Length: 216
Image (cartoon, rainbow, N blue to C red; front, side, top):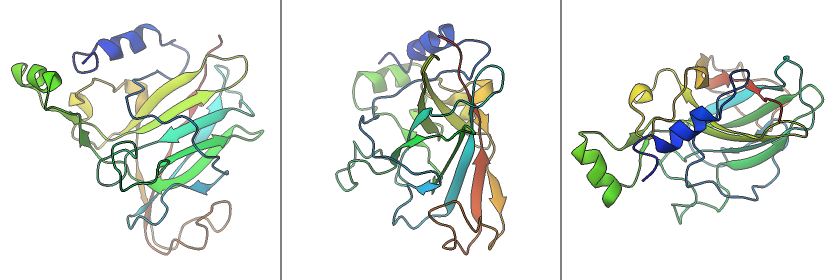
């Protein structure tokens, strides 16, 4: 209930430092204890959907890499549900915990997250209807980034072509949290460095997004 009036997002914005990546809402569907995800590891599994390659660097405010940082990454499945909502998904489906290397780089393959609705069959739905608002969240990837000596970062990033981007029902979007998906030609997937190298003959999506910590 605190999400849809924007109260949760307001708290995040008030506590976001200007020199780092903005924080955004954690949401109710995070699951602790995600399994380790190797560099270039895959969260797509057996899902029949186009591959999305996500990579970037974890940096400090001076632009230097933060070696050893951990990234807890999670998202919706293509049916619009998180694993904690869907008994047909494995507990940690579309969840992974990756430790970056000395260069601060992270890399993972998955599928493109989809838009979904927040539960609207109770008081939250009544609030939304009274305000003439829809229950849709823009599609997004979640991150919790942590490392020694810096403030933990809880955020989510959104594609620039999502039609709900400016009307996200929990007001989670920020200017610096917008990313752009690139469509890559069939046969151009990296030959090495990923669990799916040599296994992606079709066209695929990719996105690069850097995460910047702030000091404690």
